[in-house]
Image (cartoon, rainbow, N blue to C red):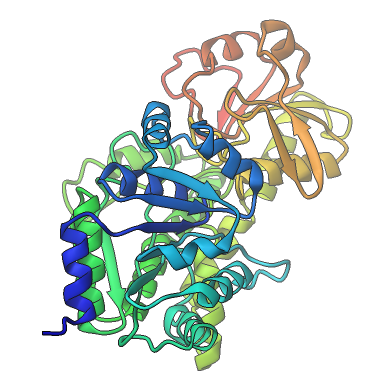
Length: 441
């Protein structure tokens, strides 16, 4: 009796004979590939950057959320490998697409990486394969873009010859509790059978629960909601921080007081802006797609405007602090502490600290930075390097110290002791009792 694609794939999942492919070996793809391999599935990762592929094949890790020894062991066992050749697709049964989805220079979605990857996958796609897009994108991408390309390039039919779905990545770099393995997953696929099979695949690999959505569009919108929720609330607290500054009220104390309520309130904190791949970018995907329907996401766009202006606001505050010391920004030495987009990680994608650096330089300030996690970084075609060591002498030489990322491995007490003036945009120095030279956002 002939079996169905659903039956064949469920059997292969149960037997751990599914061969896995992961396209894109960055912050999302490599941890996912490692977890698939650790679950007993032979996994091959793909990346256009040969350096990443060579590092994986040598067992050398380059992602903070991956345990070095896990990667090395999987590679040595032959369970995990990497390639720059897209033809590997013909040999796998499950493909996760984890490629970048940045914004272009007009702040509109750049889905060229998704499109080119899908075209390449389609050329080698075989029957009985699951394809899952994990890259954050606008609602409709899976069904309106990925599905037609796969069908055209492969000559196969979605739902009959292969399954297609969307399962948004939920990677939080540096999170000590939630990693790829134990973070709940959302799966939305085209058709009930596809949803069941793809969800089963994730349940077999991950410890977190799997929530099944009725369609890819629901899962795509869910991901946008997660990060837009944070964007809007951070925009609210940033606006209140600017108001509290005018009113002479400590916004950080206000938040701590509000946190005492056991229900109906979640704490968000102000800062020099938003960073990372998701929170600053996802609302742009939604507002862009909304215009197709003649709809303007006014509340979301307002929060984006507030968050986008925070680097400039922080520079204005820095100028005011220097003015109190009878100094101008032009010609002053400003030392930034931290250029990563969040504490204790080496990821500086969309970091607001780099925008602060740029605006400071435009005013004529002499800007340097210290970051124990980010030794060098590239921003708008320029390469910047951290000063090698944060010493009392370095601190004393600066006219202003700006804390732009709250790394925990920085000696803030020493900074306070030797600094002429400190502007703490992250409240990293909250535990210091001597605060005569510290102002906070």
